[in-house]
Image (cartoon, rainbow, N blue to C red; front, side, top):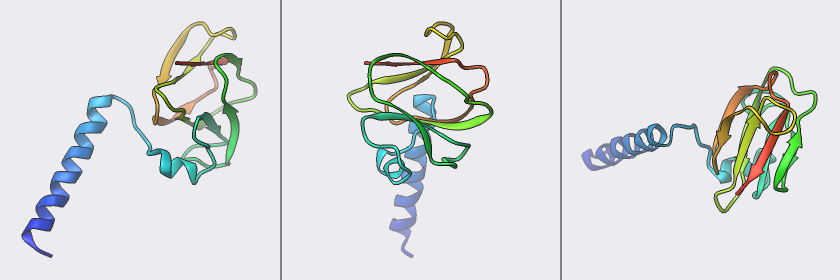
Length: 121
């Protein structure tokens, strides 16, 4: 291994860390998520943490959607395009919202207190 390749790898790791900290969210690349069952253009909820259990919910259309029977920790992944957001809300009609997933963001979340989601540009 040459000195240049080590330097390039260190720079790549530093740049990745800086981007992750700068966005304030953990992001997953759309390519890696597509292999886990969440199609491009959808926001997905998986059956468990770390993308386990497969996709149980997919959201494609704009608006407020009720969230049923989602308890415990699940992976939530926003694989939407064109900057659309996926928002978790504690109220059943899209109110008391406190978690926004921007395009490409994924996170393991305890969905027990959430009762609706919003899909919005």
